[in-house]
Image 1 (tube, rainbow, N blue to C red):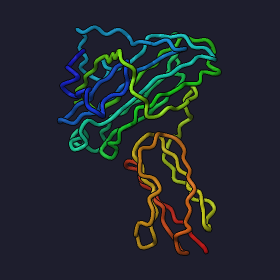
Image 2 (image 1 turned 60 degrees about the vertical axis):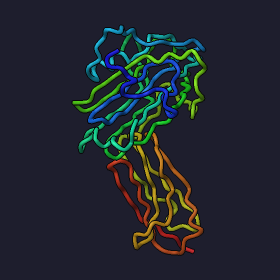
Image 3 (image 1 turned 90 degrees about the vertical axis):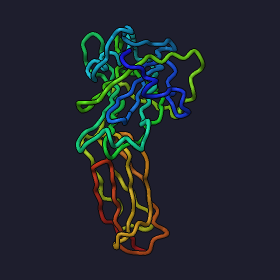
Image 4 (image 1 turned 120 degrees about the vertical axis):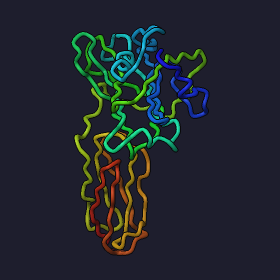
Length: 283
């Protein structure tokens, strides 16, 4: 379908796609490439396929691509066993900045939709790649809790958003061998999580403190985040977070037993969002 995916992304790479049955593809611009995969959809242990797409179909842009990143309709009830797998990543981190100018991005969202009414029932991922975020989104097996959904006919779809000028490519991935182990398994309510609308770094509590305090923050989108502690002179004294975080609300307990009394700064960086606040250690 469309261009040859293997030209863009050799699936045999050791860090390749870990979806055994599904649809995979690449977005490409200026020799930089981001890959995606959605698949291994099953309901009550029955596999669910995707909307038909013939080999002659030309997938020339994201709008056409999105039409075929959509599952066949399937029935769910309050007690359905519903699973799927996603994976996103960068093919070559050394050239990925060539895909973006300031303000440009590639965005992925997985959505559950009522097949009869078009009602959006849940959003499970909201992953953004831009100049500041190049982190792979590890392949995750989601188990969706359908309690409360009733008896419906639904479909699962991946929605891709990108700036103009991005080439797209897609193929079916069919593997008769057993699927590779999923790096993570996660349970999700069918409505998805109620995601925050904006970045916020909260004031730590208690403050002043000795020796522990809680730092909380929220992120409306997924991306690489760092949370670091600095002394009043700007010297880094601790790194609390340095990894990809999904959209959501977070908190952690920080133990400052090794710090002297005084004022410190904690700073959150998430893409273009940067925020810092003061905290005081008293011993």
